[in-house]
Amino acid sequence: MNKKILIPGIIAILLLIGGIVYLSINLSSQKKQNIEMQQLAEMDKKEMENEYQQFANQYSEMRTQITNDSIVAQLTQEQEKTERLLAELRQTKSSDAREIARLKKELATVRAVLRSYVMEIDSLNRLNKNLTAENTRIRGQYDEATRQIEGLNTEKASLSEKVAIAAQLDANGIQLVPKNKHGKLTKKLNKCTTFQLNFNLAKNVTASNGTKSVHVRITSPSGSLLGGSGSFSYENKTLQSTMHKSVEYGGNETPVTMYWTVNQALMDGTYNVSIFADGNMIGSRSFTFK
Picture (cartoon, rainbow, N blue to C red):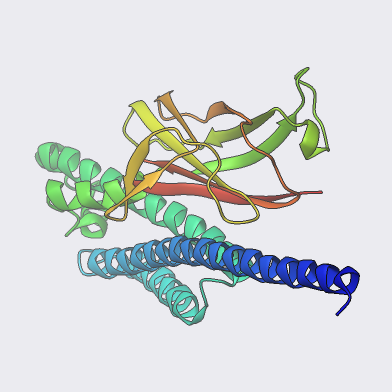
């Protein structure tokens, strides 16, 4: 056999074998990354289900403590809406990003409505205490008001539990901005040296004030986590974060800016940003760069 024909054939076979091995390793890595992304999506969906169920239970409990037919009817309507959204969420696959995003937006609305009822009931409860102290002098003027707020003397611990749910922080106005070495906005990821993340901690008068430890996770189009800035607890798991910052929060809307220095090659595609504080995921958004 001619050696000039045999040697190229052997080289071609070796190249083919090497290609198969590389493809196998690459597919295995991609499968692992996809599994990790699916697990995080399942965790997010489970937390949403738990919150919807807690809110529905809160509405049910408050209905038993109120004698005002108008308020009871409003609470019943909100409870039914919450239970309907919970049923939709349970029927939605965690991989359905568009539907999950819609239901997460609905969850924020449900939380805000519940918060307003908690504050209203707390206000009525305090008003009831004042009326009781002045009952002898102004009993005739406040007989109707006394009937409306009868039964609203809830236990402090029970009310505190409701407020804790309503006091969860929300992150809105999330922006992920790629910048070049001159600090200017760039549309080319190969020239990006820094990711600038901007968002607001929404106003929440029921939230506790003080220093908030904010963690951010940014995952690449392949599902891998960008960088590493310590770890934090979420859903009884320990997660790694891309960025971390301590933020002073006083109940009013608070702007937050964070930076991540690029230390690896960036690929075109969709990057997912998740923001965590006080053991909760308080906001998330996806950004596509081409």
